[in-house]
Length: 144
Image (tube, rainbow, N blue to C red; front, side):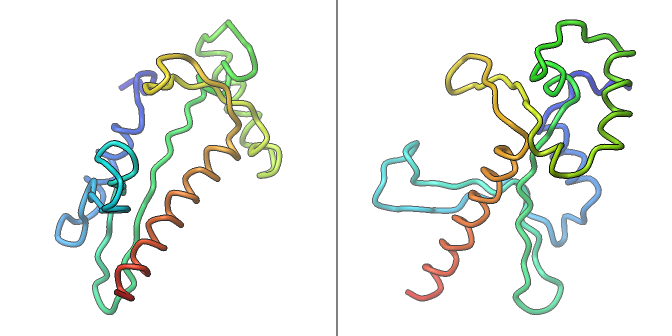
């Protein structure tokens, strides 16, 4: 099976199959701000919510799919053959975390309908910001 057409939805399906549905809620919808209209920050969507077996230690997974093709495109490489992707994979295996986080990454933005350039670090930071907003929302709701 080729993963060239894989994306975040494929990653989510894989994760859902690995986790027991007894404790896993995929694509949990959260009301983030009831004062905002729908589509403008009213809802938040966690990729996977895992219920704790005991206690209140629930987990939210925010999935980010980083493809080798997006990394190659971020490096402004037009030659995207299997050999080039394999070379990049071997380079990444040897790189430290700081170097990887600084790497440019290109992806298609559905919202803006165009290709966008960012870094791996920015993608991870945006994911952490999403998780922090979910956590703050839970804290705010539990204090009401």
